[in-house]
Length: 329
Image (cartoon, rainbow, N blue to C red; front, side, top):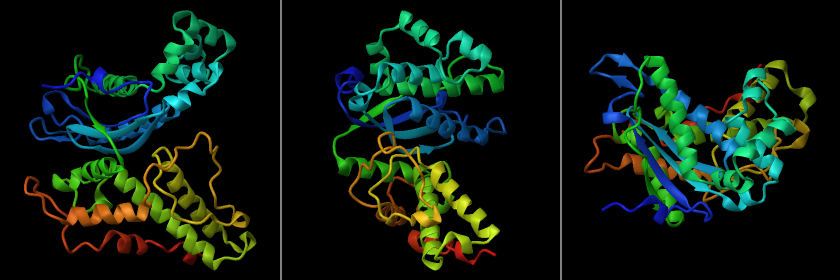
């Protein structure tokens, strides 16, 4: 028998969960559907876009994600300690980002007025909203409902899009989290939807690989440059491109830092508020994780058809091939 979610998922206790949500009847409504001949793959981008919005609202850290053709996986960690530290105004502002008042919607107002905050707290108490901000069930509700409405609107349909409620599995320690991360990041490879980590799109493993490659590019470039005045126009543009790649994955909680701070005189470091930035959650570096992901993906699983073929270079070697920023002219 299944366990009631309320028995192990409590909003006032920090916990980590593996979440899985499937499309109704396990139809390929997020990929290419062979039965209908329709390609819904563009919808996959809608999920990380929504995750980025929700990560700014909820006090919930996103450790990993994978989006397949008929389901998706997440690893989420709720932070009631951070939610309890929010000021009343910030609690209201965060919630109104995704549930604006009628005046905010009509005027496309981004920041709520005092009247909007007062209107919110007529309907709900501060503590109700505060609890929601660290509640994984509310997080999933805001994610699935948004995606379902958007997909049904595109198809001009009504009714359920996801098959029942999402499933959740408690991850008790770092070993469980790391194992689950590897499992979900290898989903496309195991299903033969991808051949290697480099083409495992819409996974946190792919995003971390891109960001780590960009960091390596900047470090290699930094080692060859003495000051910013010597940079050409194309080099400056390439630096901005690499910084943008790193920023694109900032919504994912980082692993242990593995690179020294980049020189301030080249202005390559990213400015961020330390108290709001996701905190590292595992003791090993991104490079070590990618290496673990690559080695595990090369092992055959008795119940899964896919594996990384030997013809593909090890992930860290493949990443090194991309380092060329210092040669821009």
